[in-house]
Image (cartoon, rainbow, N blue to C red):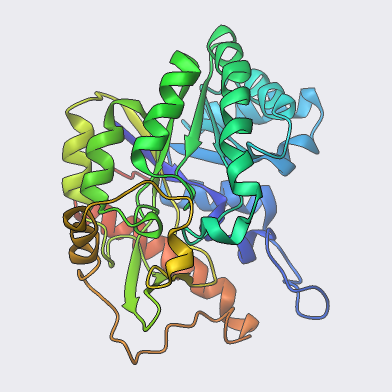
Length: 332
């Protein structure tokens, strides 16, 4: 059974997670209350909750939130910060109070698969991650949680599998369906390797626009882009009877993956030509024409249309997933 809901990262302007600062900032960010209202509208059964909202609440307030979500039939998931740079104590506290099974966390701040941009820090990240997994993995399983590390445009599928083996039963994967392209892997190749370790899914899609440096990944309604969702979930169904997933349109800024630069490949393990060809072939699906304007309202500095842009896209995403038969969304 697939339970589907929302996370906040495709709604960053509407919810107040992203703004340019006065006078351009969203004057009325919806915040946690607006997030719950949208979840109610869409009949969400899962809510991945941004950690800063939870750290602002007292223990009693988090418990009250848990009871409120239970009354709505919503499963909470804690969405933590960066694994390499932030302590997880607040995330564990929130998970305990919410009785949340999953703690989702990104591993690094690297985007667009650009390990070279991290410089010397990249060589340090793996050691930090390995040490922390050995510390936090056993704690997660002892406290009844799973630390679900996300493929956040930084690590390959095999590297994630290796991390899970190191962290033990307390570590799994949050599979972001759109984030295979930034590391040069086809979605189906990626999911076949990580499927036994997947504990939670971010439903993300991109339209791909090829450039003289590589390709851009441009946000779109989930189901309108390059990701083959039906095929992905057929693979996951071979390994899991139950799973949670959340709708997450991509960032308000296009991700430019500059794989035609030699520097971009620094820090990557060898990849065969056939493996990379599979990625390029997958990226052709619903591709954006090379001369199309890829910019979002954020990139055009058209802030006045951002709220409707984000809300229209999340509603179309839900409709697309229903039409594909991957989710059953009923009004609460």
